Length: 159
Image 1 (cartoon, rainbow, N blue to C red):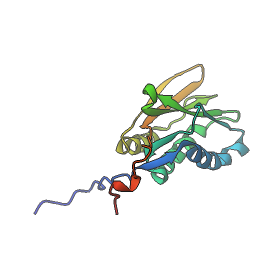
Image 2 (cartoon, helix red, strand yellow):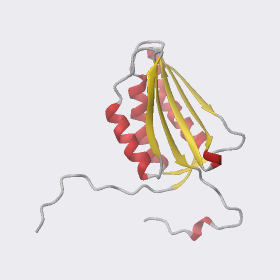
Image 3 (tube, rainbow, N blue to C red):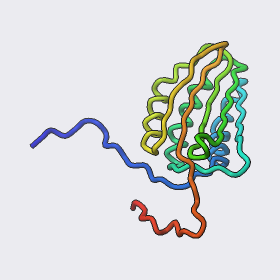
Image 4 (spheres, one colour):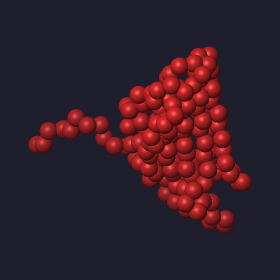
């Protein structure tokens, strides 16, 4: 009998429509603890219409909150800008987390966890280089497209 793997089993994400507004509200509440240290957090949603992504909201919050915590770890006056906007002709929503002020934080562990989470939901994540005391993380997820007149309960859901 083969030995049991010591690696945790990959869990499938429950994919559903996730409102970007609601996700940002939850992340904003979680980021408020950094305000007492002088970290300013700004959220920007750049879209004409409400945006939703195909994802798992609890899993997104669970992987993005520690990433925000790591990015906020720095000197007083650090500024975080979190923005989202439609990309690739509306097929995806692109998220950017910009960190300004001080040296780039060591966010490798939360970044690796967040990257794995985003990939399980069909997206991709990366970083863009630090310059002028700036550091950034980007990721995209497929945009949730509601088809008018098509019942969403026609798709089987995971138990």
